[in-house]
Image 1 (cartoon, rainbow, N blue to C red):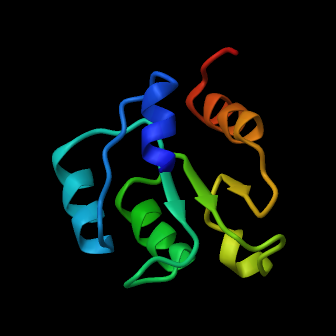
Image 2: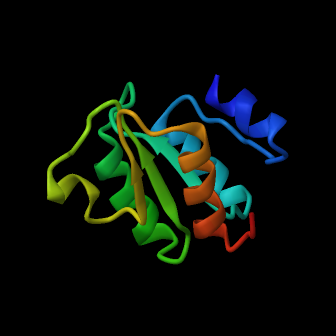
Amino acid sequence: MLAFVLAECGYEVVTACSSCEMLERMEQTSFDLVLMVHRGRQVIGSKLAQQIKRFNPDIPILLVSANTLPAQEEVSCVDAYAGKGTTLDNLLAKIRALTGQRA
């Protein structure tokens, strides 16, 4: 659903169903931003974020979670966090800030 909304807002969205698929796509393509869920099917988002930063330390990562405040160690390797109650406008503002876009 979020991928559809972001595409409607003009973003090119590439999805991955697993952490392995995500890392493979990152090896093949350059991305402006990684937006990921906190707890995916196969790996906790913060652990995947650490792997991504080792692979490409300059790519911004936005972690989205249904939690309000995760533990500090879970968000220490991401560039921004959007938790429970984050509005679409707030999420889009975070994306723009991380990718250097203007409103």
